[in-house]
Image (cartoon, rainbow, N blue to C red; front, side):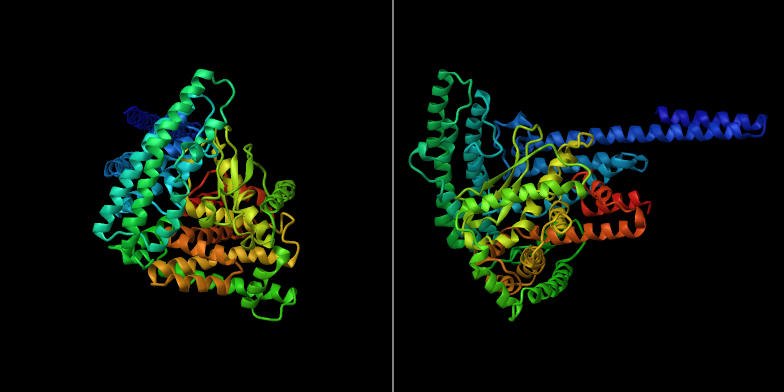
Length: 607
Protein backbone atom coordinates (compact mmCIF):
# COMPACT_ATOMS: atom_id res chain seq x y z
CA UNK A 1 0.00 0.00 0.00
CA UNK A 2 1.28 3.56 -0.71
CA UNK A 3 0.95 4.56 2.91
CA UNK A 4 3.06 1.59 4.05
CA UNK A 5 5.79 2.34 1.53
CA UNK A 6 5.87 5.99 2.62
CA UNK A 7 6.25 5.00 6.27
CA UNK A 8 9.18 2.62 5.66
CA UNK A 9 10.91 5.08 3.32
CA UNK A 10 10.62 7.85 5.89
CA UNK A 11 12.03 5.68 8.68
CA UNK A 12 14.95 4.60 6.51
CA UNK A 13 15.79 8.18 5.58
CA UNK A 14 15.74 9.27 9.20
CA UNK A 15 18.00 6.39 10.22
CA UNK A 16 20.63 7.27 7.62
CA UNK A 17 20.51 10.90 8.61
CA UNK A 18 21.08 9.93 12.22
CA UNK A 19 24.30 8.07 11.33
CA UNK A 20 25.73 11.14 9.64
CA UNK A 21 25.10 13.74 12.34
CA UNK A 22 23.13 14.51 15.47
CA UNK A 23 19.58 15.75 14.97
CA UNK A 24 19.01 19.47 15.28
CA UNK A 25 15.83 21.51 15.71
CA UNK A 26 15.26 21.57 11.96
CA UNK A 27 15.34 17.77 11.78
CA UNK A 28 12.86 17.50 14.61
CA UNK A 29 10.57 20.00 12.96
CA UNK A 30 10.69 18.17 9.64
CA UNK A 31 10.05 14.85 11.38
CA UNK A 32 7.03 16.25 13.22
CA UNK A 33 5.69 17.73 10.01
CA UNK A 34 6.10 14.42 8.19
CA UNK A 35 4.35 12.58 11.00
CA UNK A 36 1.51 15.07 10.94
CA UNK A 37 1.24 14.73 7.18
CA UNK A 38 1.07 10.97 7.49
CA UNK A 39 -1.62 11.17 10.15
CA UNK A 40 -3.65 13.60 8.07
CA UNK A 41 -3.42 11.33 5.04
CA UNK A 42 -4.47 8.30 7.09
CA UNK A 43 -7.42 10.19 8.54
CA UNK A 44 -8.48 11.35 5.09
CA UNK A 45 -8.28 7.83 3.66
CA UNK A 46 -10.28 6.39 6.58
CA UNK A 47 -12.92 9.11 6.22
CA UNK A 48 -13.25 8.50 2.48
CA UNK A 49 -13.65 4.77 3.02
CA UNK A 50 -16.21 5.34 5.78
CA UNK A 51 -18.20 7.61 3.48
CA UNK A 52 -18.26 4.89 0.80
CA UNK A 53 -19.58 2.37 3.33
CA UNK A 54 -22.33 4.56 4.76
CA UNK A 55 -23.50 5.88 1.38
CA UNK A 56 -23.66 2.38 -0.11
CA UNK A 57 -25.63 1.21 2.91
CA UNK A 58 -28.06 4.11 2.67
CA UNK A 59 -28.75 3.58 -1.01
CA UNK A 60 -29.51 -0.08 -0.28
CA UNK A 61 -31.69 0.94 2.66
CA UNK A 62 -33.78 3.39 0.62
CA UNK A 63 -34.29 0.81 -2.12
CA UNK A 64 -35.78 -1.51 0.50
CA UNK A 65 -37.75 1.28 2.19
CA UNK A 66 -39.29 3.36 -0.61
CA UNK A 67 -41.72 5.23 1.64
CA UNK A 68 -38.76 6.55 3.62
CA UNK A 69 -37.15 7.71 0.39
CA UNK A 70 -40.31 9.51 -0.69
CA UNK A 71 -40.70 11.19 2.70
CA UNK A 72 -37.14 12.49 2.44
CA UNK A 73 -37.64 13.91 -1.04
CA UNK A 74 -35.78 11.12 -2.86
CA UNK A 75 -38.26 10.23 -5.59
CA UNK A 76 -36.42 7.33 -7.25
CA UNK A 77 -38.76 4.81 -5.68
CA UNK A 78 -42.10 6.66 -5.75
CA UNK A 79 -43.67 3.88 -7.85
CA UNK A 80 -42.78 1.20 -5.29
CA UNK A 81 -44.90 0.43 -2.26
CA UNK A 82 -42.27 -1.73 -0.60
CA UNK A 83 -42.40 -5.27 0.69
CA UNK A 84 -41.74 -4.69 4.40
CA UNK A 85 -43.20 -7.91 5.77
CA UNK A 86 -42.01 -10.83 3.63
CA UNK A 87 -39.22 -13.18 4.65
CA UNK A 88 -37.28 -12.10 1.56
CA UNK A 89 -37.48 -8.46 2.63
CA UNK A 90 -36.39 -9.36 6.14
CA UNK A 91 -33.43 -11.32 4.78
CA UNK A 92 -32.38 -8.50 2.46
CA UNK A 93 -32.70 -5.93 5.23
CA UNK A 94 -30.59 -8.00 7.61
CA UNK A 95 -28.02 -8.57 4.87
CA UNK A 96 -27.31 -4.87 4.32
CA UNK A 97 -26.84 -4.40 8.08
CA UNK A 98 -24.39 -7.30 8.31
CA UNK A 99 -22.54 -6.27 5.16
CA UNK A 100 -21.99 -2.77 6.56
CA UNK A 101 -20.63 -4.16 9.83
CA UNK A 102 -18.25 -6.46 7.97
CA UNK A 103 -16.91 -3.54 5.96
CA UNK A 104 -16.39 -1.50 9.13
CA UNK A 105 -14.04 -4.15 10.49
CA UNK A 106 -11.43 -3.31 7.85
CA UNK A 107 -11.68 0.43 8.52
CA UNK A 108 -8.92 2.19 10.46
CA UNK A 109 -11.40 3.80 12.81
CA UNK A 110 -8.68 5.01 15.18
CA UNK A 111 -7.62 7.54 12.56
CA UNK A 112 -11.01 9.27 12.40
CA UNK A 113 -11.54 12.69 13.93
CA UNK A 114 -14.37 15.20 14.43
CA UNK A 115 -17.62 14.55 12.61
CA UNK A 116 -16.09 11.55 10.83
CA UNK A 117 -15.62 9.90 14.22
CA UNK A 118 -19.22 10.75 15.15
CA UNK A 119 -20.37 9.19 11.86
CA UNK A 120 -18.47 6.00 12.61
CA UNK A 121 -19.76 5.73 16.17
CA UNK A 122 -23.38 6.41 15.21
CA UNK A 123 -23.32 4.13 12.17
CA UNK A 124 -21.79 1.20 14.04
CA UNK A 125 -24.17 1.58 16.98
CA UNK A 126 -27.17 1.63 14.66
CA UNK A 127 -26.11 -1.42 12.65
CA UNK A 128 -25.36 -3.48 15.76
CA UNK A 129 -28.66 -2.72 17.50
CA UNK A 130 -30.58 -3.34 14.26
CA UNK A 131 -28.95 -6.72 13.66
CA UNK A 132 -29.93 -7.83 17.16
CA UNK A 133 -33.57 -7.01 16.41
CA UNK A 134 -33.84 -9.59 13.63
CA UNK A 135 -33.86 -12.30 16.30
CA UNK A 136 -37.49 -11.44 17.00
CA UNK A 137 -40.51 -12.11 14.71
CA UNK A 138 -41.82 -8.56 14.32
CA UNK A 139 -43.06 -9.43 10.82
CA UNK A 140 -45.78 -11.54 12.45
CA UNK A 141 -47.26 -8.37 14.00
CA UNK A 142 -47.39 -6.12 10.92
CA UNK A 143 -50.23 -3.79 11.85
CA UNK A 144 -51.51 -1.83 14.82
CA UNK A 145 -53.20 1.50 15.37
CA UNK A 146 -50.04 3.61 15.64
CA UNK A 147 -47.63 1.96 13.23
CA UNK A 148 -50.24 1.32 10.57
CA UNK A 149 -49.05 1.38 6.97
CA UNK A 150 -52.65 1.04 5.78
CA UNK A 151 -53.56 4.36 7.44
CA UNK A 152 -50.37 6.05 6.24
CA UNK A 153 -51.16 4.89 2.72
CA UNK A 154 -54.60 6.51 2.91
CA UNK A 155 -53.10 9.82 4.05
CA UNK A 156 -50.56 9.68 1.23
CA UNK A 157 -53.19 8.76 -1.33
CA UNK A 158 -55.35 11.70 -0.34
CA UNK A 159 -52.65 14.06 -1.58
CA UNK A 160 -52.02 15.44 1.92
CA UNK A 161 -49.09 13.22 2.87
CA UNK A 162 -45.61 12.48 1.58
CA UNK A 163 -46.66 11.29 -1.89
CA UNK A 164 -46.20 14.06 -4.48
CA UNK A 165 -48.90 14.77 -7.07
CA UNK A 166 -47.15 17.45 -9.11
CA UNK A 167 -47.19 16.05 -12.63
CA UNK A 168 -48.25 13.07 -14.78
CA UNK A 169 -45.33 10.94 -13.64
CA UNK A 170 -46.27 11.43 -9.98
CA UNK A 171 -49.82 10.28 -10.70
CA UNK A 172 -48.58 7.24 -12.60
CA UNK A 173 -46.19 6.43 -9.76
CA UNK A 174 -49.03 6.25 -7.29
CA UNK A 175 -51.01 4.02 -9.62
CA UNK A 176 -48.15 1.53 -9.37
CA UNK A 177 -48.04 1.93 -5.59
CA UNK A 178 -51.68 0.91 -5.39
CA UNK A 179 -50.73 -2.51 -6.75
CA UNK A 180 -48.01 -2.73 -4.13
CA UNK A 181 -50.46 -1.95 -1.35
CA UNK A 182 -52.64 -4.89 -2.33
CA UNK A 183 -49.62 -7.20 -2.24
CA UNK A 184 -48.57 -5.84 1.17
CA UNK A 185 -52.07 -6.36 2.59
CA UNK A 186 -52.17 -9.97 1.44
CA UNK A 187 -48.68 -10.67 2.80
CA UNK A 188 -49.66 -9.09 6.13
CA UNK A 189 -52.69 -11.38 6.35
CA UNK A 190 -50.48 -14.38 5.63
CA UNK A 191 -48.03 -13.29 8.31
CA UNK A 192 -50.74 -12.85 10.90
CA UNK A 193 -52.11 -16.31 10.14
CA UNK A 194 -48.59 -17.63 10.70
CA UNK A 195 -48.48 -15.67 13.96
CA UNK A 196 -51.72 -17.29 15.10
CA UNK A 197 -50.15 -20.70 14.54
CA UNK A 198 -46.99 -19.73 16.47
CA UNK A 199 -48.67 -17.90 19.34
CA UNK A 200 -47.34 -14.48 18.28
CA UNK A 201 -50.59 -12.53 18.35
CA UNK A 202 -51.66 -8.95 19.08
CA UNK A 203 -53.78 -8.14 22.14
CA UNK A 204 -57.50 -7.75 21.51
CA UNK A 205 -57.46 -4.05 22.39
CA UNK A 206 -54.87 -3.36 19.68
CA UNK A 207 -56.97 -5.13 17.05
CA UNK A 208 -60.11 -3.34 18.23
CA UNK A 209 -58.34 0.02 17.87
CA UNK A 210 -57.08 -0.83 14.37
CA UNK A 211 -60.29 -2.15 12.78
CA UNK A 212 -62.09 1.25 12.73
CA UNK A 213 -59.18 2.82 10.87
CA UNK A 214 -59.60 0.23 8.13
CA UNK A 215 -63.38 0.46 8.22
CA UNK A 216 -63.12 4.19 7.46
CA UNK A 217 -61.72 3.31 4.03
CA UNK A 218 -64.51 0.88 3.09
CA UNK A 219 -66.67 2.69 0.56
CA UNK A 220 -68.52 1.27 -2.42
CA UNK A 221 -67.90 4.13 -4.81
CA UNK A 222 -64.23 4.85 -5.67
CA UNK A 223 -65.13 8.52 -6.04
CA UNK A 224 -66.08 8.60 -2.34
CA UNK A 225 -62.67 7.26 -1.33
CA UNK A 226 -59.87 9.47 0.00
CA UNK A 227 -57.83 8.12 -2.91
CA UNK A 228 -60.03 10.08 -5.30
CA UNK A 229 -58.92 13.43 -3.89
CA UNK A 230 -55.98 13.82 -6.32
CA UNK A 231 -58.50 13.56 -9.17
CA UNK A 232 -60.21 16.66 -7.80
CA UNK A 233 -56.98 18.61 -7.47
CA UNK A 234 -55.06 18.19 -10.71
CA UNK A 235 -52.06 20.52 -10.97
CA UNK A 236 -51.88 23.04 -13.75
CA UNK A 237 -50.32 21.88 -16.97
CA UNK A 238 -51.90 18.43 -17.31
CA UNK A 239 -53.43 17.90 -20.73
CA UNK A 240 -57.07 16.95 -21.16
CA UNK A 241 -55.99 13.56 -22.51
CA UNK A 242 -53.80 12.88 -19.46
CA UNK A 243 -56.58 13.87 -17.08
CA UNK A 244 -59.08 11.61 -18.81
CA UNK A 245 -56.64 8.70 -18.81
CA UNK A 246 -55.78 9.17 -15.13
CA UNK A 247 -59.42 9.46 -14.07
CA UNK A 248 -60.22 6.19 -15.80
CA UNK A 249 -57.12 4.44 -14.46
CA UNK A 250 -57.61 5.64 -10.87
CA UNK A 251 -61.26 4.67 -10.82
CA UNK A 252 -60.38 1.16 -11.99
CA UNK A 253 -57.39 0.71 -9.69
CA UNK A 254 -59.18 1.99 -6.60
CA UNK A 255 -62.20 -0.22 -7.32
CA UNK A 256 -60.30 -3.35 -8.32
CA UNK A 257 -57.16 -3.23 -6.12
CA UNK A 258 -57.22 -0.76 -3.27
CA UNK A 259 -60.73 -1.05 -1.83
CA UNK A 260 -60.80 -4.87 -2.06
CA UNK A 261 -57.42 -5.00 -0.27
CA UNK A 262 -58.77 -2.85 2.55
CA UNK A 263 -61.83 -5.08 2.69
CA UNK A 264 -59.73 -8.26 2.90
CA UNK A 265 -57.55 -6.81 5.64
CA UNK A 266 -60.53 -5.47 7.59
CA UNK A 267 -62.55 -8.67 7.35
CA UNK A 268 -59.59 -10.83 8.32
CA UNK A 269 -58.91 -8.78 11.44
CA UNK A 270 -62.57 -8.62 12.42
CA UNK A 271 -63.70 -12.16 11.63
CA UNK A 272 -60.62 -14.36 11.95
CA UNK A 273 -57.92 -12.57 13.95
CA UNK A 274 -59.86 -10.70 16.65
CA UNK A 275 -61.59 -13.83 18.04
CA UNK A 276 -58.16 -15.42 18.51
CA UNK A 277 -56.35 -12.30 19.74
CA UNK A 278 -55.10 -12.46 23.30
CA UNK A 279 -56.78 -10.96 26.33
CA UNK A 280 -53.42 -10.16 27.94
CA UNK A 281 -51.49 -7.07 26.90
CA UNK A 282 -47.83 -7.60 27.81
CA UNK A 283 -45.16 -8.50 25.27
CA UNK A 284 -43.61 -10.82 27.84
CA UNK A 285 -46.60 -13.16 27.34
CA UNK A 286 -45.34 -14.06 23.86
CA UNK A 287 -42.71 -16.74 23.16
CA UNK A 288 -39.34 -15.24 24.19
CA UNK A 289 -41.31 -12.09 24.93
CA UNK A 290 -39.34 -11.01 28.02
CA UNK A 291 -36.09 -11.07 26.04
CA UNK A 292 -37.80 -9.28 23.17
CA UNK A 293 -39.01 -6.51 25.46
CA UNK A 294 -35.60 -6.12 27.10
CA UNK A 295 -34.16 -5.63 23.62
CA UNK A 296 -36.79 -2.99 22.78
CA UNK A 297 -35.90 -1.13 25.98
CA UNK A 298 -32.27 -0.97 24.83
CA UNK A 299 -33.28 -0.13 21.26
CA UNK A 300 -35.52 2.79 22.15
CA UNK A 301 -33.42 4.23 24.98
CA UNK A 302 -29.96 3.63 23.52
CA UNK A 303 -28.83 2.46 26.96
CA UNK A 304 -28.12 -0.81 28.72
CA UNK A 305 -30.90 -0.20 31.26
CA UNK A 306 -33.08 -3.16 32.19
CA UNK A 307 -36.87 -2.94 32.40
CA UNK A 308 -36.60 -3.00 36.19
CA UNK A 309 -34.15 -0.08 36.20
CA UNK A 310 -36.41 1.94 33.91
CA UNK A 311 -39.38 1.20 36.16
CA UNK A 312 -37.51 2.44 39.23
CA UNK A 313 -36.38 5.56 37.38
CA UNK A 314 -40.01 6.21 36.51
CA UNK A 315 -41.15 5.89 40.11
CA UNK A 316 -38.43 8.32 41.17
CA UNK A 317 -39.37 10.89 38.51
CA UNK A 318 -43.07 10.62 39.32
CA UNK A 319 -42.33 11.35 42.98
CA UNK A 320 -40.12 14.34 42.09
CA UNK A 321 -42.66 15.90 39.74
CA UNK A 322 -45.50 15.36 42.24
CA UNK A 323 -43.54 17.50 44.70
CA UNK A 324 -43.41 20.31 42.11
CA UNK A 325 -47.12 19.90 41.45
CA UNK A 326 -47.87 20.17 45.15
CA UNK A 327 -46.12 23.54 45.16
CA UNK A 328 -48.29 24.87 42.32
CA UNK A 329 -51.41 23.39 43.92
CA UNK A 330 -50.70 25.69 46.83
CA UNK A 331 -50.24 28.67 44.53
CA UNK A 332 -53.69 28.23 42.94
CA UNK A 333 -55.28 27.68 46.35
CA UNK A 334 -56.65 24.20 45.80
CA UNK A 335 -57.52 22.64 49.15
CA UNK A 336 -57.74 18.99 48.16
CA UNK A 337 -55.09 16.49 47.13
CA UNK A 338 -53.48 16.27 43.69
CA UNK A 339 -56.00 13.70 42.48
CA UNK A 340 -58.84 16.10 43.21
CA UNK A 341 -56.95 18.91 41.45
CA UNK A 342 -56.58 16.72 38.36
CA UNK A 343 -60.32 16.01 38.42
CA UNK A 344 -61.13 19.71 38.88
CA UNK A 345 -58.94 20.72 35.93
CA UNK A 346 -60.50 18.07 33.68
CA UNK A 347 -63.94 19.49 34.46
CA UNK A 348 -63.08 23.22 34.40
CA UNK A 349 -64.65 24.84 31.29
CA UNK A 350 -62.14 27.71 31.43
CA UNK A 351 -59.52 25.42 29.89
CA UNK A 352 -61.63 23.80 27.17
CA UNK A 353 -62.26 24.92 23.60
CA UNK A 354 -65.71 24.77 22.05
CA UNK A 355 -64.64 24.54 18.40
CA UNK A 356 -61.68 22.82 16.68
CA UNK A 357 -60.80 26.10 14.97
CA UNK A 358 -60.22 27.76 18.34
CA UNK A 359 -57.67 25.12 19.29
CA UNK A 360 -55.86 25.47 15.97
CA UNK A 361 -55.88 29.26 16.24
CA UNK A 362 -54.44 29.04 19.74
CA UNK A 363 -51.48 27.12 18.42
CA UNK A 364 -51.11 29.66 15.61
CA UNK A 365 -50.79 32.46 18.17
CA UNK A 366 -48.21 30.48 20.11
CA UNK A 367 -46.17 30.12 16.96
CA UNK A 368 -45.62 33.87 16.76
CA UNK A 369 -44.68 34.22 20.43
CA UNK A 370 -42.14 31.42 20.38
CA UNK A 371 -40.54 32.42 17.08
CA UNK A 372 -39.66 35.88 18.38
CA UNK A 373 -37.89 34.43 21.43
CA UNK A 374 -35.95 31.57 19.83
CA UNK A 375 -32.81 33.65 19.05
CA UNK A 376 -32.24 33.97 22.80
CA UNK A 377 -31.45 30.25 23.00
CA UNK A 378 -30.49 29.21 19.47
CA UNK A 379 -27.84 30.51 17.10
CA UNK A 380 -29.41 28.91 14.03
CA UNK A 381 -32.88 28.02 12.83
CA UNK A 382 -34.01 25.89 9.89
CA UNK A 383 -35.13 27.25 6.53
CA UNK A 384 -38.01 24.79 6.34
CA UNK A 385 -41.38 25.88 7.65
CA UNK A 386 -44.35 23.87 8.91
CA UNK A 387 -48.13 23.84 8.81
CA UNK A 388 -50.51 23.46 11.73
CA UNK A 389 -53.12 20.90 10.68
CA UNK A 390 -55.91 18.89 12.33
CA UNK A 391 -55.48 15.12 12.48
CA UNK A 392 -57.62 13.32 9.91
CA UNK A 393 -60.96 12.17 11.33
CA UNK A 394 -60.34 8.47 10.66
CA UNK A 395 -57.11 8.55 12.72
CA UNK A 396 -58.14 10.96 15.46
CA UNK A 397 -59.87 8.63 17.98
CA UNK A 398 -56.72 6.57 18.53
CA UNK A 399 -54.10 9.29 18.00
CA UNK A 400 -52.19 11.29 20.58
CA UNK A 401 -52.97 14.93 21.36
CA UNK A 402 -50.40 16.12 18.82
CA UNK A 403 -47.69 14.82 16.50
CA UNK A 404 -45.24 16.01 13.87
CA UNK A 405 -44.44 15.03 10.28
CA UNK A 406 -41.06 16.25 8.96
CA UNK A 407 -40.71 18.34 5.81
CA UNK A 408 -39.15 16.97 2.65
CA UNK A 409 -35.48 17.77 2.33
CA UNK A 410 -35.93 19.32 -1.11
CA UNK A 411 -38.23 22.01 0.30
CA UNK A 412 -41.24 20.93 -1.75
CA UNK A 413 -43.32 19.92 1.28
CA UNK A 414 -43.38 21.70 4.66
CA UNK A 415 -43.44 19.93 7.98
CA UNK A 416 -46.81 19.33 9.64
CA UNK A 417 -47.67 19.92 13.29
CA UNK A 418 -50.73 17.71 13.66
CA UNK A 419 -53.27 18.75 16.31
CA UNK A 420 -55.90 16.26 17.45
CA UNK A 421 -59.22 18.12 17.59
CA UNK A 422 -61.22 15.01 18.49
CA UNK A 423 -62.90 15.19 21.94
CA UNK A 424 -61.99 18.80 22.73
CA UNK A 425 -62.70 18.23 26.41
CA UNK A 426 -59.45 16.23 26.49
CA UNK A 427 -57.38 19.08 24.96
CA UNK A 428 -56.92 21.60 27.81
CA UNK A 429 -55.51 24.99 26.96
CA UNK A 430 -53.05 24.98 29.87
CA UNK A 431 -51.03 22.18 28.21
CA UNK A 432 -50.78 23.86 24.82
CA UNK A 433 -47.52 25.71 25.44
CA UNK A 434 -45.62 22.59 26.44
CA UNK A 435 -47.11 20.57 23.58
CA UNK A 436 -46.18 23.26 21.05
CA UNK A 437 -42.58 23.41 22.30
CA UNK A 438 -42.37 19.63 22.02
CA UNK A 439 -43.85 19.08 18.57
CA UNK A 440 -42.92 22.28 16.76
CA UNK A 441 -40.27 24.76 17.95
CA UNK A 442 -37.76 24.27 19.45
CA UNK A 443 -38.74 20.60 19.55
CA UNK A 444 -39.24 18.23 16.64
CA UNK A 445 -39.50 20.74 13.81
CA UNK A 446 -36.40 22.70 14.71
CA UNK A 447 -34.29 19.61 15.44
CA UNK A 448 -35.36 17.51 12.46
CA UNK A 449 -35.33 20.32 9.90
CA UNK A 450 -31.87 21.50 11.03
CA UNK A 451 -30.52 17.96 10.68
CA UNK A 452 -31.99 17.55 7.20
CA UNK A 453 -30.44 20.85 6.13
CA UNK A 454 -26.96 19.95 7.43
CA UNK A 455 -25.46 19.35 4.00
CA UNK A 456 -22.05 18.36 5.34
CA UNK A 457 -23.41 15.24 7.03
CA UNK A 458 -23.93 11.88 5.28
CA UNK A 459 -27.54 11.12 4.45
CA UNK A 460 -28.05 8.50 7.14
CA UNK A 461 -27.23 11.14 9.76
CA UNK A 462 -29.29 13.91 8.19
CA UNK A 463 -32.36 11.67 8.19
CA UNK A 464 -31.58 9.50 11.20
CA UNK A 465 -34.17 9.02 13.91
CA UNK A 466 -32.83 7.82 17.23
CA UNK A 467 -35.87 7.62 19.49
CA UNK A 468 -34.18 8.60 22.75
CA UNK A 469 -32.39 11.54 21.14
CA UNK A 470 -35.36 12.81 19.10
CA UNK A 471 -38.01 12.45 21.77
CA UNK A 472 -35.56 13.33 24.52
CA UNK A 473 -34.73 16.58 22.73
CA UNK A 474 -38.42 17.40 22.31
CA UNK A 475 -39.11 16.84 26.01
CA UNK A 476 -36.00 18.87 26.87
CA UNK A 477 -37.43 21.62 24.62
CA UNK A 478 -40.48 21.76 26.89
CA UNK A 479 -38.20 22.67 29.79
CA UNK A 480 -37.12 25.82 27.91
CA UNK A 481 -40.56 27.42 28.20
CA UNK A 482 -39.65 29.84 30.99
CA UNK A 483 -36.64 31.10 29.02
CA UNK A 484 -38.89 31.62 25.98
CA UNK A 485 -41.39 33.75 27.89
CA UNK A 486 -43.99 31.02 28.42
CA UNK A 487 -45.39 29.32 31.55
CA UNK A 488 -46.07 32.77 33.02
CA UNK A 489 -49.14 31.76 35.02
CA UNK A 490 -49.43 28.85 37.48
CA UNK A 491 -51.81 26.89 35.25
CA UNK A 492 -49.53 26.87 32.21
CA UNK A 493 -46.61 26.03 34.51
CA UNK A 494 -48.73 23.20 35.86
CA UNK A 495 -49.44 22.18 32.27
CA UNK A 496 -45.70 21.87 31.65
CA UNK A 497 -45.33 19.71 34.74
CA UNK A 498 -48.35 17.70 33.63
CA UNK A 499 -46.83 16.89 30.25
CA UNK A 500 -43.52 15.99 31.90
CA UNK A 501 -45.37 13.80 34.39
CA UNK A 502 -47.11 12.16 31.45
CA UNK A 503 -43.68 11.05 30.17
CA UNK A 504 -42.49 9.97 33.61
CA UNK A 505 -45.63 7.87 34.07
CA UNK A 506 -44.78 6.18 30.79
CA UNK A 507 -41.63 4.70 32.34
CA UNK A 508 -43.73 3.08 35.04
CA UNK A 509 -46.68 2.01 32.90
CA UNK A 510 -44.82 0.68 29.85
CA UNK A 511 -42.54 -1.50 31.98
CA UNK A 512 -45.47 -2.38 34.22
CA UNK A 513 -47.42 -3.72 31.24
CA UNK A 514 -44.62 -5.54 29.45
CA UNK A 515 -42.37 -6.70 32.29
CA UNK A 516 -44.54 -6.81 35.43
CA UNK A 517 -47.85 -8.18 34.25
CA UNK A 518 -49.97 -5.07 34.72
CA UNK A 519 -53.49 -5.07 33.33
CA UNK A 520 -54.89 -2.32 31.15
CA UNK A 521 -57.11 -1.21 34.05
CA UNK A 522 -54.08 -0.90 36.34
CA UNK A 523 -52.26 1.21 33.78
CA UNK A 524 -55.24 3.51 33.26
CA UNK A 525 -55.71 3.97 37.00
CA UNK A 526 -52.03 4.86 37.48
CA UNK A 527 -52.43 7.55 34.82
CA UNK A 528 -55.58 8.92 36.46
CA UNK A 529 -53.88 9.12 39.84
CA UNK A 530 -50.77 10.93 38.59
CA UNK A 531 -51.76 13.11 35.62
CA UNK A 532 -54.45 15.58 34.60
CA UNK A 533 -54.89 13.98 31.18
CA UNK A 534 -58.45 13.49 29.99
CA UNK A 535 -59.94 10.03 29.79
CA UNK A 536 -59.68 9.88 25.99
CA UNK A 537 -55.98 10.70 26.08
CA UNK A 538 -55.31 8.30 28.96
CA UNK A 539 -56.86 5.36 27.15
CA UNK A 540 -55.16 6.25 23.87
CA UNK A 541 -51.82 6.52 25.67
CA UNK A 542 -52.13 3.20 27.48
CA UNK A 543 -53.22 1.48 24.28
CA UNK A 544 -50.23 3.04 22.53
CA UNK A 545 -47.82 1.43 25.01
CA UNK A 546 -49.60 -1.89 24.56
CA UNK A 547 -49.23 -1.66 20.79
CA UNK A 548 -45.73 -0.15 20.67
CA UNK A 549 -43.64 -1.66 23.50
CA UNK A 550 -40.66 0.36 24.68
CA UNK A 551 -41.03 3.38 22.40
CA UNK A 552 -42.53 5.62 25.06
CA UNK A 553 -39.55 5.06 27.38
CA UNK A 554 -37.31 7.14 25.11
CA UNK A 555 -38.72 10.54 26.07
CA UNK A 556 -37.74 10.73 29.71
CA UNK A 557 -34.49 8.79 29.33
CA UNK A 558 -33.35 11.09 26.52
CA UNK A 559 -34.42 14.28 28.29
CA UNK A 560 -32.58 13.35 31.47
CA UNK A 561 -29.39 12.62 29.52
CA UNK A 562 -29.47 15.98 27.69
CA UNK A 563 -30.09 17.76 31.00
CA UNK A 564 -27.15 15.86 32.54
CA UNK A 565 -24.88 16.86 29.67
CA UNK A 566 -25.96 20.49 30.04
CA UNK A 567 -25.14 20.46 33.77
CA UNK A 568 -21.78 18.87 32.97
CA UNK A 569 -21.03 21.62 30.44
CA UNK A 570 -22.05 24.34 32.90
CA UNK A 571 -19.80 22.89 35.60
CA UNK A 572 -16.84 22.51 33.24
CA UNK A 573 -17.13 25.88 31.48
CA UNK A 574 -18.41 28.04 34.34
CA UNK A 575 -18.86 31.65 33.23
CA UNK A 576 -17.82 30.63 29.69
CA UNK A 577 -20.91 28.45 29.29
CA UNK A 578 -23.13 29.65 26.43
CA UNK A 579 -26.46 27.89 26.13
CA UNK A 580 -26.64 28.76 22.43
CA UNK A 581 -23.34 26.98 21.80
CA UNK A 582 -24.44 24.00 23.89
CA UNK A 583 -27.60 23.69 21.81
CA UNK A 584 -25.53 23.91 18.63
CA UNK A 585 -23.30 21.08 19.85
CA UNK A 586 -26.32 18.91 20.59
CA UNK A 587 -28.17 19.70 17.35
CA UNK A 588 -25.53 20.09 14.66
CA UNK A 589 -24.70 16.39 14.28
CA UNK A 590 -28.22 15.09 13.74
CA UNK A 591 -30.09 12.49 15.74
CA UNK A 592 -27.48 10.45 17.62
CA UNK A 593 -27.60 7.44 19.94
CA UNK A 594 -27.21 8.74 23.48
CA UNK A 595 -23.76 7.16 24.06
CA UNK A 596 -22.51 8.81 20.86
CA UNK A 597 -23.97 12.18 21.88
CA UNK A 598 -22.28 11.84 25.27
CA UNK A 599 -18.90 11.10 23.67
CA UNK A 600 -19.26 14.05 21.27
CA UNK A 601 -20.11 16.53 24.04
CA UNK A 602 -17.30 15.26 26.23
CA UNK A 603 -14.78 15.72 23.38
CA UNK A 604 -16.12 19.26 22.95
CA UNK A 605 -15.53 19.88 26.65
CA UNK A 606 -12.03 18.44 26.44
CA UNK A 607 -12.76 15.51 28.77
